[in-house]
Image (cartoon, rainbow, N blue to C red; front, side):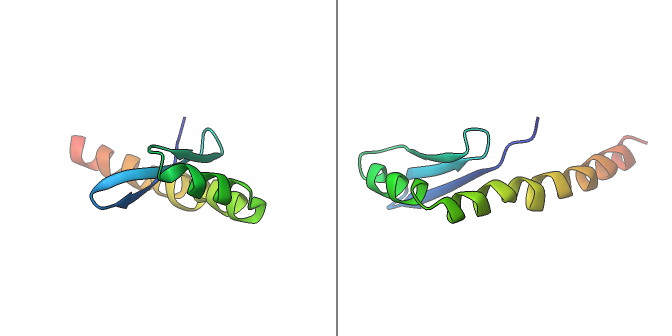
Length: 73
């Protein structure tokens, strides 16, 4: 199970993050709620974020598995 998390931080505090498993932005503070609502309403932006699992996580998963196997020899 591979999950992509994209965290947004302002003034040293995480205020909203995208969770690919949930498929939406999740506010961490009251400050993040309007941002999460706005971004969640943009379907094209959400689809772009969802595709990040394939682009970053799944693609690199094999790279790190191979590197880990080399280190165990």
